[in-house]
Image (spheres, rainbow, N blue to C red):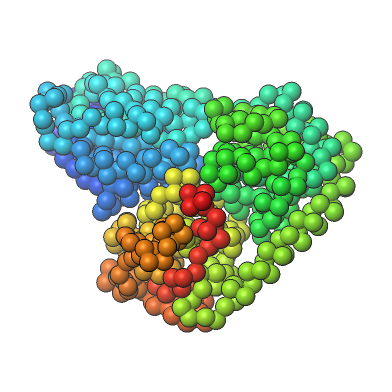
Length: 561
């Protein structure tokens, strides 16, 4: 092949790869298609790994997961038409979860525009509502520039996904290098780290210093902004009980004096000052109605549009969670010991509420029943985790159980779909986590229904030699929906459209070259998990759980009220 660079020519695909390299992208997730192969060729030249999967939804979820783990934007590349539509769910999930990623989709050639070319669809129109930026690359010379523009838009306000479609003739054509705009690394987008309004910072510091019963919720943006240390410093300096949700879980380790989990509703009903950091007043928060109407409510968020949405607030601060919390701690320093000394009784009150909730669940956490109670399963998983274990939850009812029990021991070590509630993120999140952090152990809990959606990419994990400990909580049901149907229509109609076959996922894992084991006795859970860890392979422990046990979170869902 002639060396195009000697002729000072470069293709659209190679320009895309140069822009990905400038952004720090180390891997793209993809399913091959004729429209996009020149990007692969460029990635080979730029030293970017091309990881091929079995379904485009997996590619998009993996790009989302990569962004969450690394703090850098992920990238998925898919072909036109069904390739792009298959990825829609992954992009939508990233949109609701505020995860920065770029999806690149193919498109028919400009010369065949509106002629009915292979896999031609209006991708940009479809992607616009679920992205922060969606556009067509109009010209080969603009390819790198448009990629950089898309990444820039990912960080406008709260992070999120962008989409670019690139027509085949634009991608394959070659232009003189000097005609192409190739933005230099680190020089095409500014820092988005805002410390918030100084007057609002002072006001919040004053509120916390004088509060008698404050509480703080540390949401996903604490991890997104890598504000963990600032959050820890605040709660310890001012002696404030902290609750965590989403990717904010693990900000404080289990056992920390300020780490609370099961008393959140009690705290939010009795606190006098409540600070919500980096999480919206969405369904998970009862749209703000679960906060005491008598409390002073403060909301901190990267996105101005989120602050005060669904519920009135007393103070709103738009900014980077880490910088805002750091500034509040500094502003409160030296003021009456930050108010910390008078809060012992409040923390003791909350700790007692925690203990009451634990004791209520204790019989099921230690249950020897068979079929296995889901609480026993998630309790065993929690005991199994180490400080280096990244925990991934993919499912409905079984993962709702785990949310009450499983406590990651380090920041950035909890992954779940986020507020879109997408099933099927588990295997692609494992793929992303093991690619980005091969030094970490990954432990994933699947519902049997959730695993079925993207489970064939277990083979991708085997192919790339990415070991993890997987557990399927198997009740042969879509149990979260089953509960709602039983509650609404009666037991005689509880099994309509939600009952699955008794699938032996352990044998599925073995068939694909991984480690598999079946568990029916709760005493066998811990040894099976340990054998999976020691196998050095992708694994699935198929645990048969009680189909008639429902998580409290499932029974309390507002959609069933």
